[in-house]
Image (cartoon, rainbow, N blue to C red; front, side, top):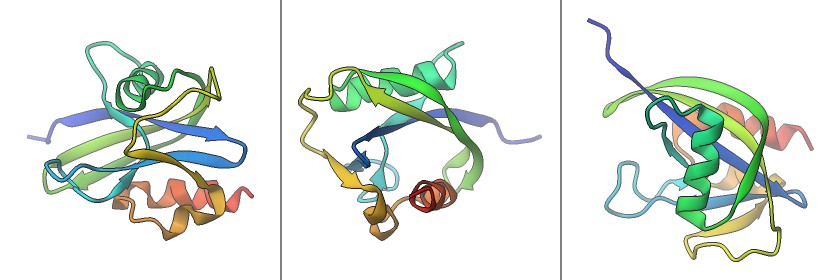
Length: 129
């Protein structure tokens, strides 16, 4: 029987050539890795709706979805994931964000320690300079 796929919505929040990035907390899977805001889709929630909700919950920043950049399936030891990377823009660019998140210039994204499933998307973001 095939392993169940967990659907994940990820917010690629861009502002002035910088992206909102955090570091996974010590008590989580992939602890210490860098991450874009995101998480598991709930019920019939679309990946874009999920990305917007998770961004608000994790960072305090309200965003609008602007389209899907990529969909990636990845197998980790803890499960199989379908990640949908959603381009987002802040509704209020001056809003404060949670302490574990910060703005990272596009050109610096490759130097961060993202999970393996994010590699192709990070390359695509940096290469679109």
